[in-house]
Length: 547
Image: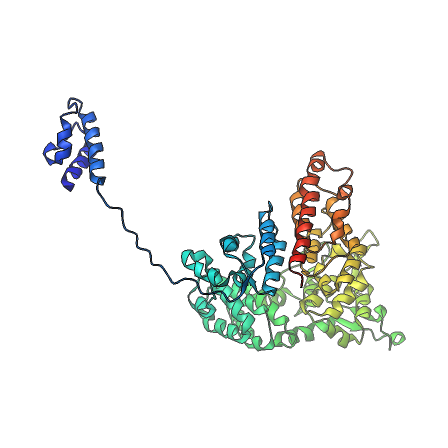
């Protein structure tokens, strides 16, 4: 029977001028219909026969059978479903135009705290939410509220496999580069030694790119146990760089950073012994027994030496090739800055027999620590003060971090020094006080973006009413087309921190009198009303999950 169809196909390919179909091959049913068709027009005849033949082939055919393997039903849930008010609230949060990651995460946290799981009617929504780029960071929490039915659903969509427990050892062995890094990170959290040993075993087979990415994982829970491996890698790089001076600069810098993060490492000890000779106590008899800025000094060779030189700072350590800011720092000053920023600050206390404040005072105005900004002017700049701040953060020294902020708040316009990383060492109350006195959060202020992000890091920090006013006023004071979107996003994400009474304020008054017309027309719709709505949802969330 297929012959008649193949004959028609060949005719279609060659054209009716070159070939006509063989009527004798046609089924009787179609032949009987030919008597009713005009055969003078060969093309029309062909089209009509082909149409009849097409329907003839399909007629009476049974639909293809699709065999679906029906798996076992989902296991019985162990935990209780979230309450009806909680589910209703989640629907409201998810239905909000732009969504609210902070409120969704808070809802998940509270549901997990109560050992609740999501109801079946919202399960699909939540599984797909975990695939959204904005919410991927919540996958672990979604896993905890998906229940047995969620795991059962993974058989229908492989993208939902994030609900399954991952075999990180298998992923490390067989995964792609990004997956292997994720696996090593997870193993490092649970068993730091095992993660390091896995990296050691695979090190020779890794590419230059993966070596750089994977060794950075060791920064998490770094300890003296990691030093032998890091020292081995450092030595291997030195051997390579003897032949090619600029080989693997990024990997070298990463390894050196890790080794210098360990105060007792061989490299840290070496660096300290060489660096401390540049900072010393004066031996002037008039100053003996005194500890002050006047008897602490720094002296470095104008043209460098065997330590403060390109061969050591760049070729051996990969820290800095030359000064980034030659208008302020000559190379030797730039190299010393980088070294000071990596030395545990408490070592200066022992070396100089001085307190953090006394040392900071010396770094601020002692001999050799400052220089003129401009030879024609008297203004001076302290060269190494911010290096001390970086060292406090680098070695997680809260005493020095807090002392630095306390001393230099009266010396600098703090946010111009870009040391927002130190603010994490302040308590919530201290942080608010510090911001209110020293920080300008408006969109055009120096480093304001990073300073705002610092506030959101504190998940449980409930701002006082005065601080909430300060933040909202700062954000709404200089709105432009450039910063408007970021301002709205920040305010919405801040809703968990804000004092509830802020929505009772006339927030429209916070807008600058010079705001463009389009800002005035959009302000209530995009800032005031959303804040009121989000605050209402937050208050409802607190009530639903109370107790």
